[in-house]
Amino acid sequence: MYEKITPPAAGAKITFKNGEPIVPDNPIIPFIRGDGTGIDIWPATQKVLDAAVAKAYKGQRKISWFKVYAGDEACDLYGTYQYLPQDTLTAIEEYGVAIKGPLTTPVGGGIRSLNVALRQIFDLYACVRPCRYYAGTPSPHKNPEKLDVIVYRENTEDIYLGIEWRQGSEIGDRLIKLLNEELIPATPEHGKKRIPLDSGIGIKPISKTGSQRLVRRAIKHALLLPKNKQQVTLVHKGNIMKYTEGAFRDWGYELATSEFRQETVTEQESWILSNKEKNPNISLEENARQIEPGFDNLTPDKKAQVVKEVETVLNTIWASHGDGKWKEKVLVNDRIADSIFQQIQTRPDEYSILATMNLNGDYLSDAAAAIVGGLGMGPGANIGDSSAIFEATHGTAPKHAGLDRINPGSVILSGVMMLEFMGWQEAADLVKKGLSDAIANSQVTYDLARLLEPPVEPLKCSEFADAIIQHFG
Ligand SMILES: NC(=O)C1=CN([C@@H]2O[C@H](COP(=O)(O)OP(=O)(O)OC[C@H]3O[C@@H](n4cnc5c(N)ncnc54)[C@H](OP(=O)(O)O)[C@@H]3O)[C@@H](O)[C@H]2O)C=CC1
Ligand SMILES: O=C(O)CCC(=O)C(=O)O
Ligand SMILES: [Mg+2]
Image (cartoon, rainbow, N blue to C red; front, side):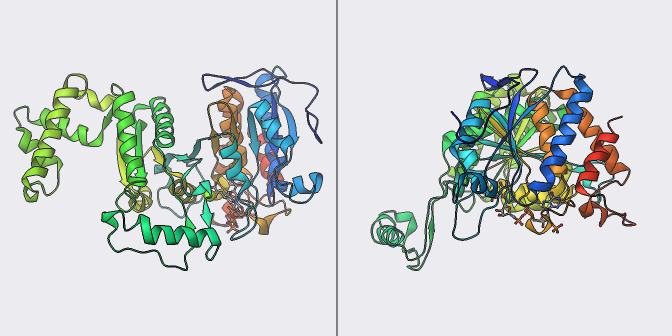
């Protein structure tokens, strides 16, 4: 079945039922070491995870690691250009849950991202990236502890589908001609717009199915959070990209108010309900005026539309959501993408789950990680209905590769997410405690050491792993 690798003799498969993993006590878990700093980070991660599982379960549970190959290491073993061998895909398919270090993607030409390919091949449609603060972590932000968000990034479409044509390519030029001469003129709203002839072209598909399954997962996650964090913010640039990003927002609200009608309230609904709670005799028109800025300057048709919306909300959900009951629901709101970048800095505690399309989520997860201590503290998971691959937010950080200095925190915390996904909470808690206590004692790698005041002598990557284990207690 495998060409060049052999699964561990001991251990059993993780299987999935209704999207949930069924985990044996001795699961076989494939891992990809990763390019660049993967060589430093992976051994540190494996050591910490194994120590936590051993301490938590005293031998009753144990991970059987299965080394599989991707990136440069794969080419060394399988031959030139064999970046993602079939063996690796077969192993992940068979064992369901995997963890990986970062993989290099060249800019401009060359291979397309192996990281993105893995997400698409296994339909890992939700990229989940929590950004929370560990006490003692130095941060450029004044109140980093106020940020506690989870970026829920759609992981399979948007421009990451990778359908692009190079400037000057035959098909690219044909496409531009077709657009300029037929399709754009046939679309009145595009008027006399034309694509410059020397353009590269990329396609940005945002589907209803892809958007809604991401938002569904985000709302389900919100329902498990403490009450004050039960919020999902739909992040989009729908003012500019109306039929892709704007549609993402609309489909998100549509899903929330249909599939989760009893569990959710939209921000606009919450204003309408609370206006009526404050003033039970408020007219529909006055309620509309209070929720719609500039109401008095709207055309009569627009005014009537807002009044109708108010009436519909009160007629349909007053009984289930009125009299303050909406405060117990998951709040679904939306923010424009550029605004959310400043909001997570100026009003971090107002946000919880940030549901995004692929590109926005890529940007936002690095930015949010920076607030809570940097890319060394940014874990992640790529989750689908029948498999999951855990990986950090950051890349290969090539200038630090092989120096035993990089912060393994993000991949270790990705391992924590994996343990939690498996239901191995006791082991996950040990790692979180060890990492928190190491940081609180200023036992940190170079990235955090240089920011501490006064600066401290940095630990090596491997020493940080040992410090985490010592702090298990
Ligand atoms: N999922 C994946 O596998 C990903 C892969 N990539 C790929 O990685 C390659 C390199 O990308 P690049 O743009 O340099 O981005 P990286 O995320 O690899 O690194 C950028 C900088 O972030 C800081 N950093 C990254 N990881 C850590 C860490 N573990 N601990 C502390 N600091 C860290 C370092 O800053 P400083 O030097 O200032 O300390 C580093 O130089 C590219 O090929 C890219 O495509 C990128 C993102 C995700
Ligand atoms: O695949 C890559 O090289 C980059 C991916 C990335 O930046 C991410 O997933 O956050
Ligand atoms: Mg990224």
